Length: 422
Image (cartoon, rainbow, N blue to C red; front, side, top):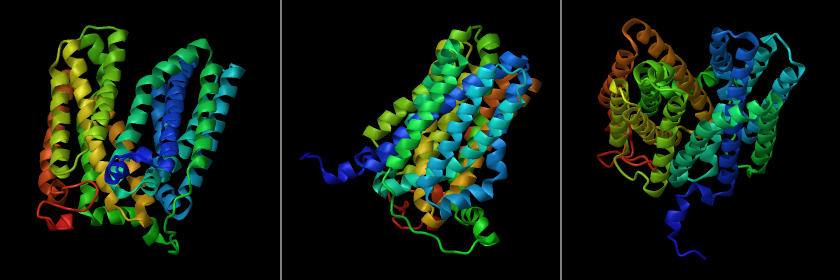
């Protein structure tokens, strides 16, 4: 028997069997999605040569989540979340087979790809709230921060390695890429079914407009949760610079595709390193103040990247952007999950998923539009300053979030149990 203190082991998410399968599912699904994303982009451009159609890929995946936001969250609250995830993976597996059949047929029309993308986006729309809401059912509150950190490291790792793997597999043959993605999704579905069914309270409320809009109502009535969700949305909206990396690489840094690959990988590498640090040295106190500090640092390092003219400053700056974002993600998501009641967690996570998607999409749009008028350097630097302004402003508007002390229980600076009282 281990001599480690039980309290310490209870804080480690991998101690719990259900979470181990959940983490493996996240890793496999993230890899499959990255492989398909790269392969789909290559396939569409190879067939059409139309850059505009590449932009429609993200829109096809995002719109279902926006349109179905009220239904996806309610479904996650009313039905077995593990079962929803399994069904979604089954649909994604069929989509991968659909892509495989398309490339095997060597078709010259790409509209079937967009039809499959809408189906895939619909499955992902239901997957997000169910998966995000299941994690708190698999570990106790004291291990939730660790669970969110290591789970985020899984998709960050996939975000770094997945595109490279997808490119290599597509280079061998398109059917190899989509076939590999299908196999990964099938294994992930098995992993979901191996997650022990968690005990959770079932809702017996009749479906009504009140229950359908329950997620929105709860978010806007709880300033801690509203602050956490909106902080992420506006900080990423202002500070996003990834869309301009090709322009920066070629015109500002005067570098090539190898350097572009390093620049794209840098935020993920920084996030993984920070995730490893947080698993070893988790945040124990002053969580709210640390949250706003690192959102501010996210903006500051974005400014440094924006003003840099050498790749060896730009890469570390982007790595620090990713590291800062990992800290804020861990704190925001943990606070949000712990403060959200079980009966509305799915609906709240549905809103959160759409907010995150919207901030990423609109952030790229903001960066591109501003860069068109005032240039990429000014666009990125102003966005970084904007993220700092958001951090300062939100710390004033949401004192309860700022004064949140710990991640495993509701305690604020004055020792009270209600952050709204701070």
